Image 1 (cartoon, rainbow, N blue to C red):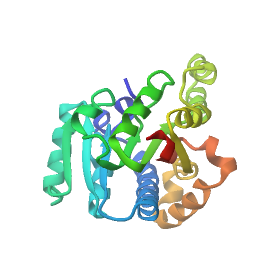
Image 2 (image 1 turned 60 degrees about the horizontal axis):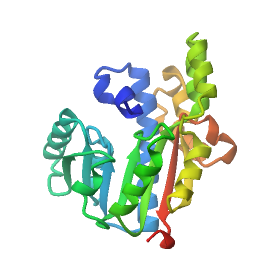
Image 3 (image 1 turned 180 degrees about the vertical axis):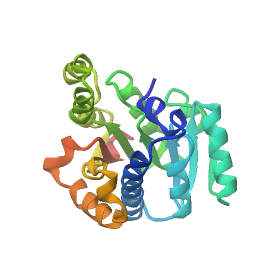
Length: 251
């Protein structure tokens, strides 16, 4: 089961208000970051594939920014929610959903047709990641972009330790198959992707108590944005966002 399946909003329909607020700032940073990066590297009106896009929250934000987004997800329930979201927000002309995953991507996305593929909270183990990255490479146009978001080792270890789950924390700390930042870099290079940028997501915002953040989300977002690009803070962020481009030599 992927990390998204374990922790995504569809598995926890009534999260606590503090968690909602913290995730809101982190989500806003991720959306702003992606919109800026796509404009910088590829322009507007792009063909975007959101692989493992769940209920379409990020897809809707990108569709609102003028891109055409295809959500690919294995869950029929998530796809139905995505379709409802598109209809209710008036984005039906720029947002679609089909069933699939990394192993069937070539069946639902014509080769070379995507300008950008998002792969957020889908990859969490070394095993199978190289195959997924190669499948994505087949779906994107020359020099197409790949946006990857993964959970990070250190924050997960600390979360388990703080809860008193020391055995689980120890396992996460020593698990050689966990997909961490170093392993992701290696696998991206191995499969023909050039690193363009990386940012920590939630490094500040996810730590701030609700009582402190109340009514100050813009200031918190400003601080989170500044912290997200600091190299020394990358490993401490709960999530790592990496933007890559398919190398010319990979074609």
